[in-house]
Image 1 (cartoon, rainbow, N blue to C red):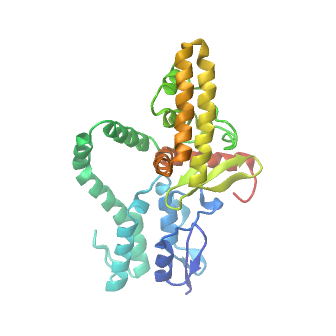
Image 2: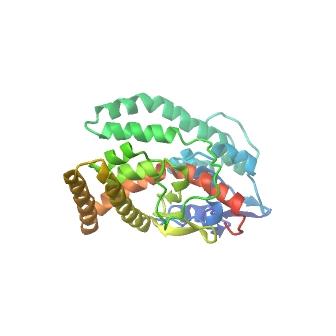
Image 3: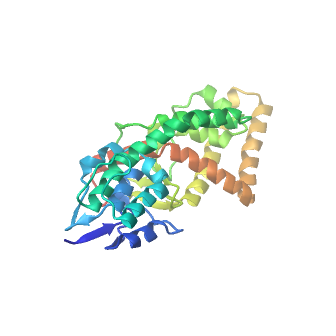
Length: 320
């Protein structure tokens, strides 16, 4: 019986589980291949941590279908790996959570990953949710508003399918036709105009052309119908995003001439340009902006992945 482990992200292969763990724990994370972007983070973890036996993976697609919108295992990866190492150290075949016994260690590992550990995360989350809410309420200023917004957005990422042929190419302007004139006016006089506009832009599904991976500091962006998705560093994604936001903020500013006084329009235009200049001249500000923009993209990650599935189905170009 031959056993082989394979990193689902980059296709690194080894016959030793410890070598796989060293690969996973590298400071510089491997980059996700295009052909696995349709898998969730948790599905990738399962397919990586569990092996192929005689060239066939011990987990089938149906067994991990319930994880297609999940990041729980990935977020608790260190604890999960420690569970698996504990099984190896003790040579045990009994689940410490439910006491179910297995004839093989690898079967116990599969049971732990797919069933009991996943359930244990939910239990822990339930126990701590009250204290988490309490801590959030104590935060002063806009931080509490941000927490509430992020929680509501994460809760909305569930089983979504878009009836679209493809997203807008990343190199092109976003489609802002669905943003009404009142909202546009509020944005160009908002102190957070750049991130406010990006949040509004990404409410339109056709603009979901970025799939950001925080772990690898990289992402996939939709190029066009021929090249489809290409790899980019997250730093470059954010830089391009800021340049595009400046351009479209100035366009909105120009469109608003008939609505606001000239002095207001001139002031708004100066602020749009000043914020962009400050961003380009300050490394500290660039880091802060990188975090904010990345968080906004990450909240839309699952929706962007779902849209990429639709691209694959309708375009039918091999290799994605």
